[in-house]
Length: 358
Image (cartoon, rainbow, N blue to C red; front, side, top):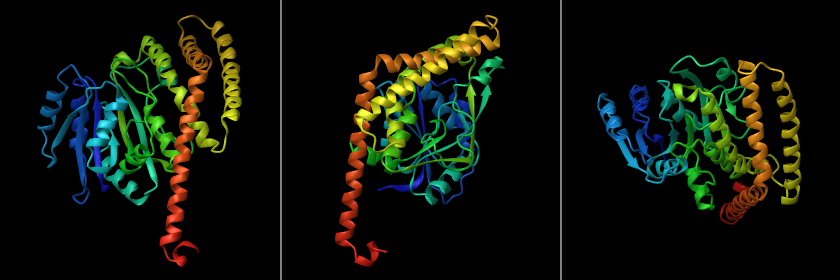
């Protein structure tokens, strides 16, 4: 049974040094008494004192709600999120990162939106970056963090995805994905590895299943960025490791945009995408050659070139894997199409004619 309510889920790996402020913002949520909600922390194979810090911090506040801490020994954010969904009591699962500071009305606004729009599969908000120390200028220009507006206005998000920070997933929709054979092909963050894309993968799968992706500008939060995440070394590692997510995200997005596309036609679109990336990459490299080495402009162009080259290598070196992922997505699409047709035919057989034919 899917109970209307909000399950706040924090998945964390060695988050002891970040959780205190995040928990404080959750404890200070202003939630009307008629809205049911709960707080869950998924400890994802942490080796520090995450559990003790979390419990001690939560005990400082009088909220009328208990904190549940569950353990997921398999490293990887996707595994931790799966544990969160399994543990959640309520239908609206709010995925709050351990460095997200939610606005005081976040939970109540989530409840109102999700209750009013039952076709929403995923709902995203608007994050604002807060840095531990003032970052270099190129960090603000070339941001890799979950922040900013995700659509021109509140409502359906035409790009089919919202970032995972502060994201809300309808548990009943997630359960239907699992019943249809969906499995995450991405592990997302894995220990100290910076692989990513699991949030976008889930959003695209929900679109394939027929659900809507929404953005609402009232859902605001602050995203805290530590000093170790604003270095060129961190950026390079992130761009290199996260590029692999395009093996899954590209074929899934094509299915969302072109639902009737065949595998043969998809291969042609892959070739066009690769050509497009090369056409952008070459001018960036040329511009970089005319910049002063070490200048903000040089660093910015270097990062853009590295990002493009990482994606190009994925397309060239993992061509067959991308095609197999496309077949996997198409199989998921077919299962949902078949299920929808079956439900319609069943309704025609069992319901009065006046209720089916208008």
